[in-house]
Figure 1 (cartoon, chains in turn red, cyan):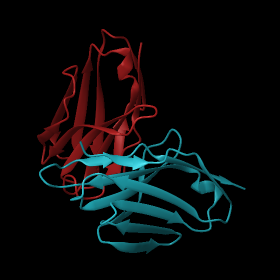
Figure 2: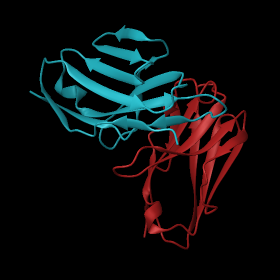
Figure 3: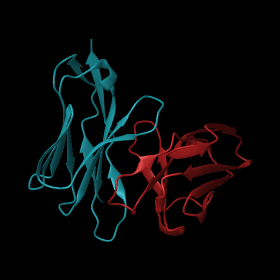
Figure 4: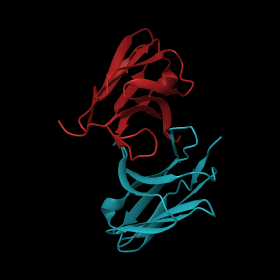
Length: 113
Length: 112
């Protein structure tokens, strides 16, 4: 595997389900990010991790819970989501947080019923 | 509130023409500027980045930055149908925030 990988690529879940999104980067980067992309809206940054420590949380509802066990892996745990949470969830990584170019994974297309 | 503005388009250009994509940003202290290309249903991929005022060329792509006017642009020469995508402008302002702020993107359509 090369670059940034994400699983699953598609996910359909009910509002009472619990699921997790996984991201893995094979680039040796130090920073990892979760973004949400909804139709007709800019990419929204959700969380930033630097050397596996969370450095930013952009007022994301607690039904989204990130986890970063090491610099290569990032998870997004989902529970009791709402239909408006349906979106493309993108993981990205970079050498240093913010100022360096970010490389994106293919994304997980999430549908909440 | 840091803002990045782009014309949503669609911008239609004939094959072989120059496509000009524009972006303005609100934070005068912004340091780094990125252009990403996103095909429908795919994730963004980096096209170019620029840090200093002036032009930066890479193949058919030229990024132009004017910090005084808070303006960054992307020119695509000899446009090809494969260039049809949404182009996202992203800005890093630094100053204690480690976030990239993205614009909504400009949809480019290159007509054969």
